[in-house]
Length: 271
Image 1: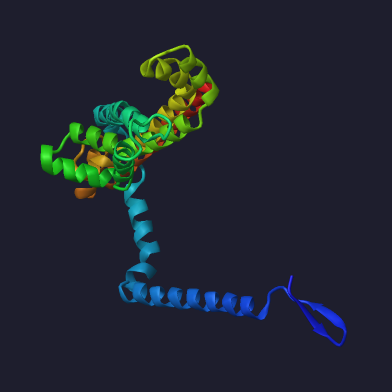
Image 2: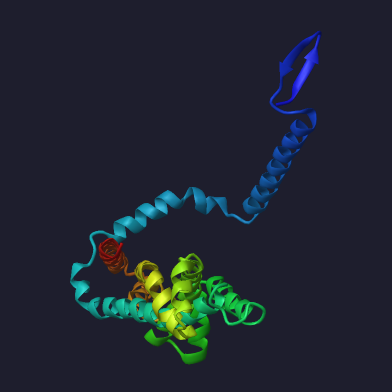
């Protein structure tokens, strides 16, 4: 720690003069940035609506309660579509993510110079765009419906699954691979008997974890026309049917909680 000498005594200081000036300069810069951003936000905000928000929320709560329980008979098919979107999208993503992961891992890629950068680009590109944006693009290409939702979930999940899987591949025990290679096994045999058995627990955990995430994401894809219960929510919001909206939100909550419970049980059984 910096020490200041004065009259044959040493006085402890937490920071030197240069470190203290740098510390305070960083604080002043951060404060200035915060004030500037707050000013920009304030100019773009209608504060009257912000102050009136509690009254509006209370009015909507009054209109939305009690939920319209008889409407639940019309939510069976949307819930089933939502489950299909999440499940089929996850399965399709895994089919595409596995080869991408093997091409991205340093110890399994056929070419670190050409193929690995392409695989990493696929991982980054699919992870960087939200599922709702993918759904909007796919609806413009193939039209609205459940199929667009399945593809949106699948594309969004490729990067997530492939990234975690290729990291698991790079962390395998190489001694097992070397032992199988020493027997004269081919490249595919080494992969099948030396690599795949080591990453199967990670693969199963990643699959269930991503399915759990996709359950939640698929509930809102209907807001842009990609099918599922979100489509019913959007229709109810458009006609201001607040009792139906509250019921749909409750159903979504229960649906997500059940999906989380199933995911936790499956992960516990695997691990």
